[in-house]
Length: 261
Image (cartoon, rainbow, N blue to C red; front, side, top):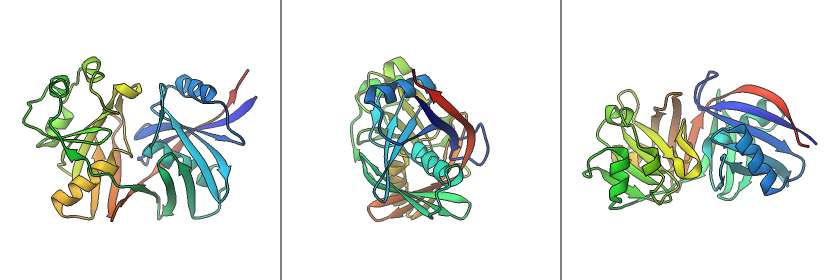
């Protein structure tokens, strides 16, 4: 069996920036084991699989280790591949996912995604979280399926050198660390050794949590964000009630073929 595969860099306007995601269009579903094996073989933070369904597509995301409920950058990459490589001629694509209906639409030279907004609740935070990040326990901490740690400055976020083996012991999908930005409204990094990814280059789903927080804090409905991993990603976040619009660019890096024996 031969399957098409694409790779796109999301939340960037140039190759080798942002967050790379593999995209595998399917005519019918493979087994969960086959999709997980493909994701592990790709060894990217996410591989997206989709199948046409009704007026849209059923979309699923796999890390090298697990299937996840929501992934922003691989959703952006899937929309980009449909628009730019597969001849999808509508202005908006609807994805049906574990997290409900998600849309990707063209907006100027960018793509806009519409996700449910998440408002993490303030939490104590386990001692191992602070120890693994190498920070004082005075930082504000919030909890959803991720922990979100708020620091005072971009420099503090950039200088973190987590102990990933220790961070893997924290009971959460991943760890968001965020602070006010020097050139943008806020910056962040995202660590998820629990999901097989020590540091994710750019994490759309994390911005469904950081954007509501900073929107309330800065009293702004539209914010410019930057994820300051080594690859760097740029996003615009707009609050729309209980939804968050996340905008960014994507570029195609690879087109190929998977040969399943």
